[in-house]
Image (cartoon, rainbow, N blue to C red; front, side, top):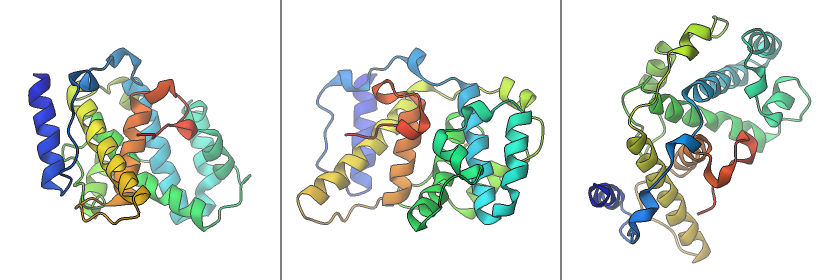
Length: 220
C-alpha cells in the first residue's frame, strides 16, 4: 500500500515536470492522524480565511466580521497577525496585502480536506473562479450561525490528505533547491499557490508540532 502511494506521488510530480525526487524511505509516508487538527478546527480556519478574504475586498467590513467571529465563538481560532489586521492594529503594506490575498488558496485546500469541495486544485494554476464559487456555495454565508456546520464536519481519507501534503512539500523543496543552485525551474507548478497549499496542509497535520497558524513550519 505504501509503495503504491509512493509511486502515485512520484508519478504526479513527474507529470508536472519534477523528475528528480524519489521517496526512498517508506517511513516518510507514515503519519499519526491523532496529531492532526480536528475537523472542527479546520472548519473554523476555513471560515476565518474566507472572512479575511472578504475584508480585503472591502476593509470597512472588518468591524462586522470581528463581531461575527466573536459571537460565533471562533475568535479564539484567529491568529495574532489576523487579529491585528482585523482590529486595525497593523499597517497593511503591499507584502502583507499579498500574503493575505493568497490565503484563499489555503481556504480552498482546507475545504478540500473536509470534502466541502470535491475537486482538488490544479498544481499549475491558482484556484479558479468556478472553484471559489463552489467553495462559497458549500460553506455558510458570512454572518450566519456556524455551530451546525462545524459540528457535522469530517475529513476525507486521511491518507489522501497526507499524500497531498507530501506532494506540495516536495514541490516547495524542488523550487527551493532550484533557487539555491541559482537555476530556474521549468516545472508546471504555480509557486505562490503551491506554497499556500503546502502551508495549509502543514498546519493541518501539525508539522513540527506547530499548532499556531502564524508559526506554521514549511521547512523541507
